[in-house]
Length: 157
Image (cartoon, rainbow, N blue to C red; front, side, top):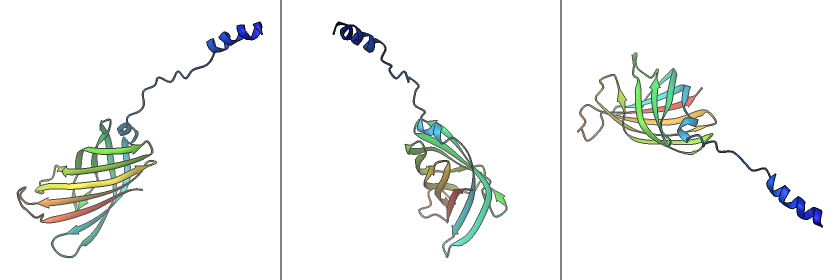
């Protein structure tokens, strides 16, 4: 009995505890990278949709904050014109390996097309991107109706 009484404090002293003090990786950092993508484009210019497809593009995702990312679409072509597109502060949610992206607001490009706004919704699941980007083009920012709507489907190759 006495031996058990002496052994009990020793067991408590030598009990292993989890020493994992590593900080958790921010969600935005888990999706950073360059994604080779196929891009499907549908144009609506006030009449029937005009299908067009672009490929050999890439999306570069960088962390802005722990729960927002910036997205740069490279290799997007409109006819023969290369149009790089950037979106900033895209909200993300979910968990590592299953991230949802959501955005509504201004879209920037180096090519003077007019005023671009739009929405982006989609996911990055296990490194595979599946995103829908809807772009509204207005000749003047105060135009009530867009002169063109561009629906862009972005999918990992």
